Structure formats: C-alpha cells, structure tokens
Length: 171
Image (cartoon, rainbow, N blue to C red; front, side, top):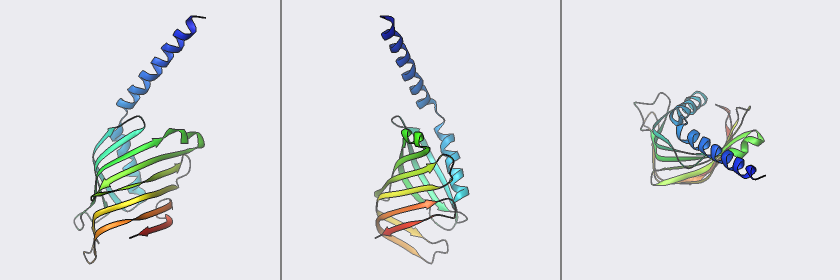
C-alpha cells in the first residue's frame, strides 16, 4: 500500500515533464504558418508574422502581424498589430470544437474576442466583444477612399471562405 503514493507521484512528475516539453518544443512557427496559409486560401488577404512564441500553457503570442488585401501589396499599407495573444480552450475539444480567445493590440487600442471552429466542420465563428482602435487608418486599394480616426464597435460573423455572414456595428 505504501508504494501507491510513490507510483502516483512518479506518474504525476512524468506527466508534468511531458507537458512542459511539448509546450516549449512545439513548432509554434510552423503551426502559425499553416494557419496563416489556410486563412489566405479562405479569404482574399495576405498575412505575415514576425515572431511566434509560447506563453503560459495553451497560450500563443504573436508579435508584429500584418494583414493586407490580396493583390494590393504595392497599393495599400497593411493593417499591423503589434501583439496578438491567443489562448486555446482545450476542454472544447471534448465537445468537438476548437475554441480560442484572442486579444490583438495595435493602433493604440485592442480587439478582444473568441474564435470557434468545429473539428470536422469548416465553418468558423468569430465574435469580437471589444473593438477599440483610437489610431486606426485604412486606405482603399485604388486610393480613392481613406478612413482615419477612432474605430470602435463589435462584430459577429460565421461561415467559411467567401460565405461569411453576420452582423457588425462600428462607430
């Protein structure tokens, strides 16, 4: 009977060491590039990231992410976010979904929300609870329209690729 606590202790130690090894040795850059390429095939955007690194368990930190419409590389400035933090919700896998909370910082403000996708369903659900970008600026590819100033609001979209539907409210 006295060996049971020792066995449980050794198993717990092995589990912790394994989780830490996976956390720090996980190929975050490769995983991020795969996600970005998938996004680029689903939407008319080009995405580039400077740095991807692990945070706390189930947290990925991305620095210097730029986003621009496809085919407009020479024509428009990209949207650039200084830092993005993505926190995975691993228990959602039990329900057959991949859920993550995100915070994107840039333009002197932040965007916070949740991403959700079924494991075997290509439909994404993106909810933004907070959108507050005081220094926002954007220009159309033909340079006929320029939007500049504080941007705030919320949006909720669902779909896949060009079939995204939902609601948005901006101020």
